[in-house]
Image (cartoon, rainbow, N blue to C red; front, side):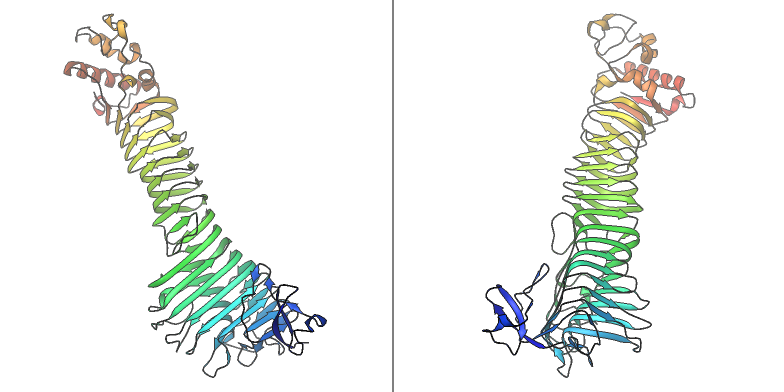
Length: 548
């Protein structure tokens, strides 16, 4: 049976308790008390309510003994407690909007402008037929400040059953004038939004009046099949303070849509781990940040899994820690700034500008990078394409296929493994060597290590017509040795490897730091072309220019 309760401090318990109004502080221990000092992890000791209402067990909205004024669906008290679960189901006999309000009044003064509902169990908001079922938490519809809070100890389910349903948080309607509104949703368990369900954040018609709009969401996990919609940009002159924390979130279908950034104030969206499935969409208006929570941004604390779903704002991705997994689908980002953490691409990923100062990048799929400055490491066993100005420092390894179509500068010595296809400019500032790989080039290969092509043989260079070295004293007419350069003249590593592992279909080979006469240069270029023509009959001798 429901009774009217008041809240008093229990010295022995160290918290507030709800007791019958017929009881006194002196005899409170003789009656049954309902502890409301805490709700799971949600502390409620800061509630300063003037009157209390407690419903024991489960409650179905429109139950005449429940916490609502059933005629107008406004809350009966400033602080209410449901010890079981709360069910807000669309009425079969009702057509239109079936709404309930926590923290709201109308022009007749019905309802409480400040109200808190504590549900120890679960909350279910669903609809039937053509009814839209809405639970509004903090709604300033007429000229009053509004402050609503819903605390749930279990789980929350919105939607399903064939109709549409929503929880509307911090709504502003007609006549709100310069007043302010606050809506808070705290879920100790999982928030599930099914198809036909939505969580409307800072919701209402366009409003240009002054004041503040404050909204917050805190939940352990989010399963999204319907939609989460945030509309802060509707309130042009109000100061918007929005802080949404979703824990571990999976967007299965539907989408999370933050459409408008407020003119004044800040909107912050935070996830612990976020997974976007193929049918889902993250319509973030702000750039993505992996790492610590950042005001005014969409922040993922630990892991971002991209499984084929959409990402709205891809202009910038900043990663300070954690892991980005591109598991399926195709994604493109403008600027990817990575100070630490891991990037793992198993699908198709394109980055216009990639700046990595630390951490690791692993590619087993198809990764395309425009401009880049690579520290940390990048290991590719799939296909890696470089299309702009890219600098690495011995931290790029590729055993798959590497396509260089831009200007690639490697400051350390390069080991060519896998397939290196060069149609751009590859500047190997400390030389290169071959592992288990092959070089195909129609662009420019430049090595700043002359020993890759030429070797100073010391005193053996004095043996006329056998070897030609940079310090050899043989006359320039020793063309027999030059023509047979790649067969007889074997430097320490690369010359014979070039013949075995390289194909040149055009472009240039530039060797810097070499002192040759014009005659020597011409003879060496002729020998270079003749050697690769002999090994590759499809290559025209005029298609290759060896420049020394």
